[in-house]
Amino acid sequence: MSEILRLDSVRKYFGKFAAVDGISFGMKEGGIYLLVGPNGCGKSTLVNCVSGLFHPEEGNIYYRNADVTNEEMFKISRRGLVRTFQIASPFLRLTTLENMLVALPDNAGENIFLSMFKPTWQESEVNAVRRAAELLRVLGLRHVWNMPARTLSGGELKLLEIGRALMCGAETILLDEPVGSIDPKLCHQIFSHVLRLRDELGLTFLVIEHRLEVAAQYADHVFAMDRGQLVTEGTAEEVFEDPRVITAYLGE
Picture 1: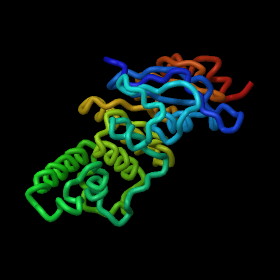
Picture 2 (picture 1 turned 180 degrees about the vertical axis):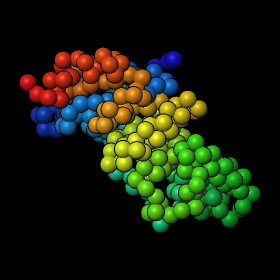
Picture 3 (picture 1 turned 45 degrees about the horizontal axis):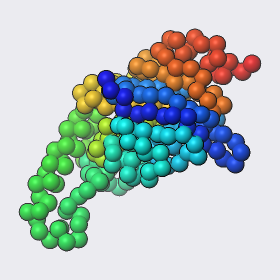
Picture 4 (picture 1 turned 90 degrees about the vertical axis):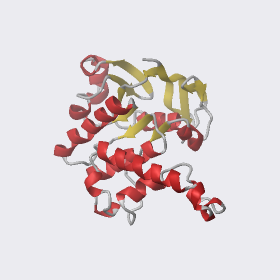
């Protein structure tokens, strides 16, 4: 597998405080990577830098060998690197299918000029619905395709967030606590869908998650942070048995 994402000595400051302090690591295509660490260690800030929401003051970020360090978030998204947020924010009055279609980056039917000429957009609209329907099948949301988003469960909303990222053309998805505040019975279902997306579509995932007893079972590789720095990395067993990680969570 080729390397899809590379961070080299990335630093992000807030004033004089280094929230991300010289992070370097690489991710190979088609893997599920878990980013762990105690609250306030810099995980979300790091993901914000990778996705373009923040720009680091030092270091470089490469996606598919292109330097995206200072690119805007929408440009990085169009490259196929997309993030979701901890709190799902769909259009609540729209149906599940409509929420998927809204996420399309380019829609000829919404163009003020092209919309008057049905042949210019009809086929693309049909293909978009077909793609959305297939993704809803893979995500296990086909049964709620016509239901307003406000009626979906917390777990279904998390899956819808992933679906909307895929409609944007995502090849690598940064997931911020995909099972946070979710019924424990549904946590494994959500991660099983992540596993399925990796296996069926070849997607790559970087996941921030505090429910380690669940997430660790699905991770191919784990990165552990503390105080803005990368403490260690490896398999879940190697990382969670590392004394530095135990100290980071439990204190001195």
